[in-house]
Amino acid sequence: MKLPENRTSLKTIFKAFLFLLTTNILLLKMENIANWITVSIFKLDTTTKLGSAIEFFIFEAPKVLLLLAIIVFIIGIIRTFFTPEKTRKILAGKRAFTGNILASLLGVTTPFCTCSAIPLFIGFITSGVPLGVTFSFLISAPMINEVALILLLGMFGWKVALLYLTTGLFIAIVSGLVIGKLKLERYVEEWVYNNTDTATNNTINITSWQKRIEIGFNNVKEIVGKVWSYLLIGIAIGSFFHGYIPENYLAGIMGKNAFWSVPLAVLIGVPLYSNAAGIIPIVQSLLEKGAALGTVLAFMMSVIGLSLPEMIILRKVLKPKLIATFVFVVATGILVIGYIFNLIF
Image (cartoon, one colour):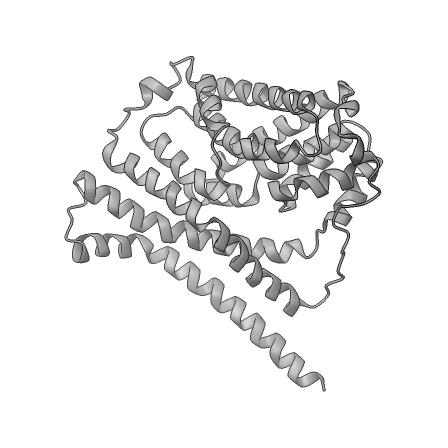
């Protein structure tokens, strides 16, 4: 009776191996494919503005989508080991500082998005997780997104990825500590404390690797299906910058010598809404055209970590004063990071 199950399991594992092998081969050949399509099919000269923009889009769009598919597949498997319930149990009862560090690190490794903010927030509070520790998690989870980290690693190398990780953790830890010290629990909506447990509590014990791989593939369908449009819009904007904006053109506007560039980047970033995958191609083009690293990091963090839609969603559980404090503390941290990196680099 077990033979068919074993065969199905082997088939699923082989499917995963074939998926990873094929996507990696395509990634290695993508630059040549993009050049061939631009020159041979579209008959464009890659040294012209239009040709350069088109080649950039043809190269970046499938490359980032393939990278995203690989990342989401692996994260989907990792997600089977980390459930919201387990995360809540780890954080419950932890003291300040230790709890803030642990919550920030868990935010990096657990793939929860803005749409998960309300049930997670309620679950953390009702499980005895301090407010400041909860905010450290809520800041790090979207800001230090695992997709962002691996895409940054693939596009810019380990130094920029590590830089983004450490600065994001710093902001999440310090912001959580500050919010915790301010004792703002009274600005959480009363119904949250009266709710015994509306957070997701459907912990499923998954032991089969076949099931884990199937969840990984389902994760790819679900997440890539949701973000591909944002991704293509971001790459299209990046392609325009790549082809039509002269080298170092943005140095005067977003360069390190423009003192207003960091707060301006944060002000522009907050009203925008994009996920990590959609904003990184724009970041790549901004850096290429002379924008300072600190300014670009501030812009990226404000878009991902302080988006207006997230504030609207959090209004359901937080009173305006706590949301305003949250935005002020995180924005201040982003500004400090932006200026520090513009001074150093």
